Structures are given as structure tokens and as C-alpha cells.
Length: 262
Image 1: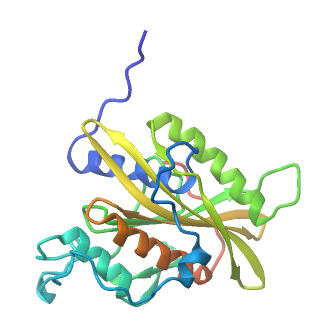
Image 2: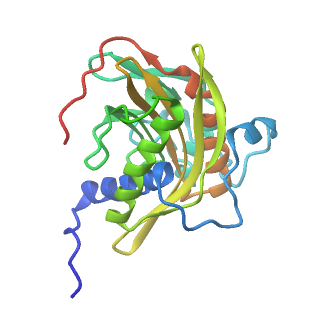
């Protein structure tokens, strides 16, 4: 007997649920759908060209058409135009409502702070109503039974991710791994691609995420996912920029009190 899945939400809620499923798949998924376009490690990405020519996205939108709702404005391909902005605009910090933690975001003024329904994020952000990119900071209790390290926090987060992926029938590539420096310690950084089906559509995202040991001790995860709908190669370049440049920007500004689950 086949169990019926959850009833699909309508309109914007459906788009967000679809994006969140793919977001989680791109961040902490179970292995299982590796493909020839292997995910570059953050370290490998840093060795690649920084100024490669733009892809078919190319004609920029008119400045007056660029909004938080559609960063790609009136470009012929708004999705690709939005990713070009993420590839080239400067970084800026964005914080939760209580200003207790901030993460770095390229083109930071055009991200909207949101709350994910299915991912227990401390704070989340969306780039455009079409979810051209997503970002989140996740706060978790430290795993018990051993030293609390970045690797242990990463493992704990990915165990949660595997369970979540089974629930949404998502898939992801096997991750690649690198190290980055944050303050006086090294943190584990991983990159992968993921997808999640919803009705007749599948969302694919390229993701990068890092695990931090915070006071408590507790675990913090900073995660980014970039939509591959318009231009997969451009999405990977944006993801690689985030993997190179974003994770040192985490700024814990005050006490972190985990909000109740949604």
C-alpha cells in the first residue's frame, strides 16, 4: 500500500517548499546522484580563473528594474542576470532581527530575510522571489559522546540532512571538502549539488556550507545554495565564490537563543 505524501501547498508556499527541499539537498544530502559535472572543492575553485567571460546571461538589466523581488530585473534571462550580480557585487553583512549573528551576502541589500518552514534555521535569506539563491545560519546543540570539533558538527548536520532528504525524496552529489580559517581555528567546508522533486518540477541547487564550533559548546552551520535553473555553470561559479569568500565573514554579535521550531 502506497502512503500518500503531504498535500502540496499552493502558490508562493509551493515554490518555497520546493526550493527549501532542493536547498537542503544541496547542503546536507545523502550521496547518490553523482554526475560528470563534479562539484569543485572550495580550494580548487580558488585556483580557477576569477575573471572568466560571462555566459549567455549577458545583457544586464536596466538599473531601475533591479529590485529585491527580482534582482535580475528586465533582463532577457532574469535568473542568469541575478547570478551575474551574485558573482560580481561586493559583500555585505546581514543579520537576524535581534542582530545577534550576521553572515556575509553578495549584493546584500537585495536579499530578503525569511523563515524556512522545513529547515530549522536560526535566520534565513532569499535572493529574489524566484529563489535564485538561498542562505541560512543554523544553530544546533553540540553532538554528545566525543570532542566537539568542526568535523563533528558537520557530521551531525549531515545526519539530519540525510533524514530530511528521505522525507522529500531529494538527491545530492557526494560532497567535496576543504578547510577555511575562521578567527583562530580551521573550519570544515563542503560543497555539493542537490535536487528535490515537487509535482512536475525539480529544483536543482549548487551548495556550499561550513561548520563552526561556537560557545556552549554548540554548532553553527552557514550555508548557501544557488539555483541551477538558468545556467548551471554560472551557478557553480557563484557557489565557488561563496565557498572561497563567505565563511570567514560569520559574525556572532550577541547571545544566540535558539527560536522555537516552526
